[in-house]
Figure 1 (cartoon, rainbow, N blue to C red):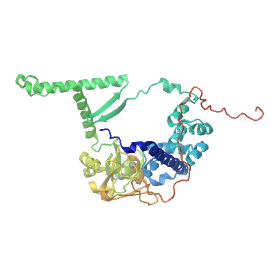
Figure 2: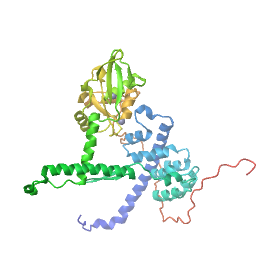
Figure 3: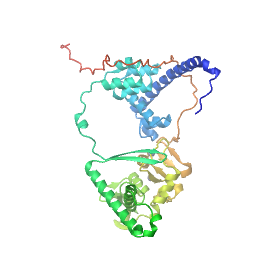
Figure 4: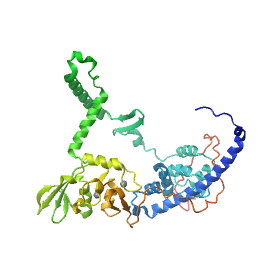
Length: 422
Ligand SMILES: [Zn+2]
Ligand SMILES: [Zn+2]
């Protein structure tokens, strides 16, 4: 980037900065006050369990949806909301524009019981990072020794991506690592054998034969082999295969060797053919589900391509989605794009239980909550019609260099002493 030529405006920098910082202080105070009200609203929704009616799976999800907030931000809001009663002074600080959501979020996340006064005072001068340190310095009753002593032995996998590709970091306990090594070896051997039988003895072809297979290619062969097996087993790519018996006359259904199902459960289970359906008449099998109803891999990919998240507004789920028949196939709904939408398991179940209604066609989908109100995607934010909260500007914490040496962490109070002893 070229350096900008020094301009005459440069002389005004201190004054312009003052003006801008002044405005920031004003907006900061208003924002804190607004956030203070937002957490109160979230607390009310949480307390009175108001979010169930909207189809959102939690107040956090509802807040993220309606404010178009990141899930981290929504999480901070509900963290504060859940402890609002415990931290009245901190909450008041927000309402008066003095404390920010992030500051109080740190306090509400880990601050000890009865620490409201302590942290409300500290937050007036401490930055978010300083508050984090202060909260960490609180003595904890027990450091949960067993959890510290025992590392998590489950396999874990993390991924980072850049322009060239993705890098996975796979951590396996020893016995799983041995299994992985052996599987990788066998696939590498197989690749070598294939390579040799194709190109090995052909001396003249030295120039054009492909390079020797790599361990990376062996890994991909391992993945593809596993995937093929999985796809052959359940073409619709779902978790478990459930066998359901459906009586064609009664339309009653029962799980294989299991309990009879309610209407909602039957429709839910048979919707995406996430199960094997046996049609019966008088208890005699007369066939196993129409194949057209099964969502094959190609149709599934097309559905994912059309809309890769759960179709319920406000839900961004992308994993384990079910293909839902808008008109159930039992009622003659075809298994084709216009009659299918992807739903996360939570919303799929909620719909078949009657918690939300979904009407098609798929390209003009209408999702309504349990009160029949249409759910709209996106945030509720709109140009304000009310004046901003009348609070003084917030200059932010002083953030002066913390003297942790002299800092007295919050000390949890011992339980109250009974009368007579005090
Ligand atoms: Zn369904
Ligand atoms: Zn969903």
